[in-house]
Length: 376
Ligand SMILES: Nc1ncnc2c1ncn2[C@@H]1O[C@H](COP(=O)(O)OP(=O)(O)OP(=O)(O)O)[C@@H](O)[C@H]1O
Ligand SMILES: [Mg+2]
Image (cartoon, protein in one colour):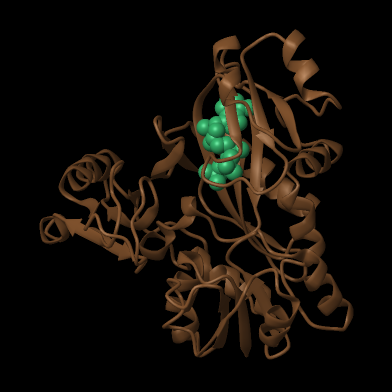
């Protein structure tokens, strides 16, 4: 089996942990020769993710291709798919998801619960007369909270977004949940336990995942059913990260879907029978899905660049962190640190979830990603 991976970031790198064991030959495309996955693929193509020739060099040499990032030129992918090359999730699914507004509309049409939203033709005029709070989102290109503006009142209008956008009801939530859902080529779905995402308030970036989530069994079951229905509605093949809000008024709402392994599923590398990366590979390659059973409660924390970090990364407290029982470190090998950039992650397993959380707090205090202060 030859697998192509478009994008050589940390998700591709973690897929490679598993392709190596499964005996799958890989070709990775990324514009950076030092991308996290560049040195571990069987073959690396250095090129742009919007260059049709570079994409074809990977897809044409592979039995099936997938991606580690959703910001890829779908036109080029559709042309190759029409010529009989296999790309999963299909470019149509990717395209439907890339436009966050279209994604919301599809989910709503399929009867899934989503926050109320509107896409006025004149956003400026709309903002002049609408009550606050509300949330503005860019239709294209957002990630890690970029492309989302939470507008609590008029004073926040200076941080409003430019370009194509839509507006969404502000959800007062008690938790943000995420469910990883695998769907095979025959449409069979299998989901992982519901996890809880905790955000860094300053950077609006997810920094902790708690698995399983601290919610009652009924809520967890409901969230899982919604997530599975959402992925089925998209008709996607592969692993999908479904982000949900648990609103204080009791509603469970779909926030967004990522068409790939997801930050909220990194803990499965250590804590599940089959991790999300292997599951994704199995799904797109047409192999049977593996068990998604949880072996142990787990807490994952992202290793983000410190707020003033620049230059080459310096991992302070690395050895002390490794001494914490049940802790695993994953570094993504990025050559440059930036404030809040995802540089790696830590997973802590403990039979007791609260104990895992406590150790995660300890590890966070120990391990910091600073920079040499020099660029290049
Ligand atoms: N309608 C909403 N009400 C309240 N908070 C929201 C709403 N929409 C988004 N947020 C907050 O902003 C965060 C980022 O939003 P969203 O997931 O849509 O964007 P993103 O840039 O794709 O994020 P990421 O790449 O981190 O998943 C959410 O996780 C949530 O904390
Ligand atoms: Mg999100």
